[in-house]
Image 1 (cartoon, rainbow, N blue to C red):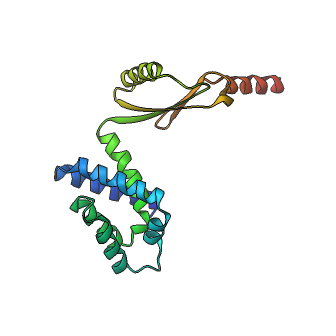
Image 2 (cartoon, rainbow, N blue to C red):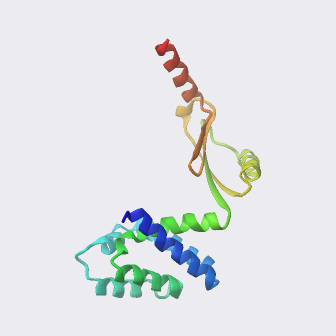
Image 3 (cartoon, one colour):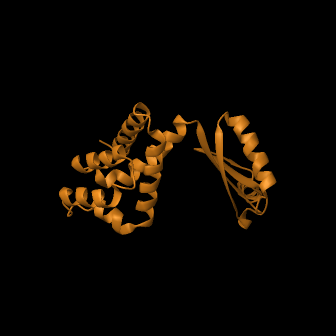
Length: 179
């Protein structure tokens, strides 16, 4: 079975358990912590992904590292992953859980790349407009990229709207070469 399907199933099971036991917010914080830890600590990630490290050792390390830091249900979930030999998928499971949580809570993510840095007033205005258009709570991030020359590129989940001057010039160039 495809590992992304498996990761999604585990993430969905944890989300449903969190809802059922009314500890979803705490589990979300735990999954963000685990995701961040796996991103920033390659040794931690290697430990989980290594087939050489025995499951018993992994259980012991997880208990020592996480018992006081995360909710018991999250720790139990990590132990289930280890027991089922799915521990190398923990990073992907955390990422998918966070996405499922955001979808469940009606949160969408948008990223705008513009030719210049946007001030807070423009970001707030854009965020308000995106909230109306998407009918959701949109979390907006931004960055400046001078190679765009002018305009912007807006990404919302899987969709992208490219209104940059550099892309427009490339399209015109293609048309001129084509004709």
